Amino acid sequence: MANGMAKRNILVVDDERQITRVLKTALSSRGYAIRTATDGDEALHIMQEWSPDIVITDLRMPNMDGLELCKTIRAKSHVPIIVLSVKGEDQIKVEALDAGADDYVMKPFSMDELLARMRAALRRVSTAQDPAPDSIAIGDFRIDLQARTVCVKEREVRLTPKEFDLLLYLARHPGKVMTHRALLSAVWGENSIEQPAYLRVFIGHLRKKLEPNERNPRYIMTDPWIGYRFEPGE
Image (tube, rainbow, N blue to C red; front, side, top):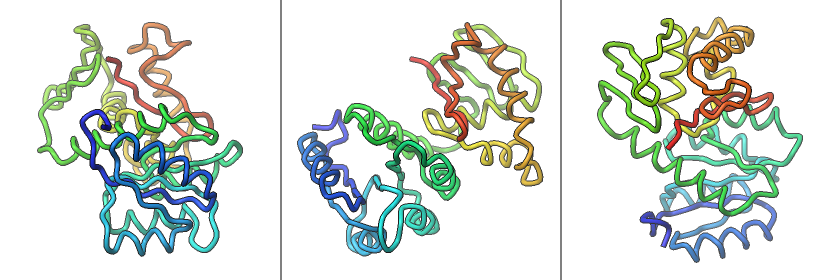
């Protein structure tokens, strides 16, 4: 059983049959129901008659690739999407995340890492379906949306309005890679998406205020060339 999430439907899309075979065997043994496809066209055909709870897709495939698949799925569904990528695909990874993918895992990957990413994605979907809360209590953080206050391990931290907005956006997507473009658009507006200096400065401010050791951050993690990931602690 998959830690209380058995019987979840997982669609694996990859033209490498060895990858789909390994994932089907490993995930089936943990209680998931698995369907596989070799490209985006086949994946969309499967989704017409079968509803996955997560889509795991490679990026480079014949016919419809993973990037186009992300765009097509996201236009009509909120199902979590995890992309599989290889080293050196940073730009297409960014494009996939901006197109609606929720996370990525680098090939070769460990099954434990993939399972952890899947659990995080399923938790985000569950949380997103709840009514909007007045506060967020997650890991070491307590964020009061009305008072606009933040406590880390019961220690109140004073943030500027933009620092608060940036932290809040990250905290609403825990464990998910947020691209530079997505963060700039959400916090500063569409006109600021080509101003990454804003983001570097404010991430630096947040780390000084939140992290026990800003040179070895535990809460706001950098995904080089791509964006940032919020890890709230236990």
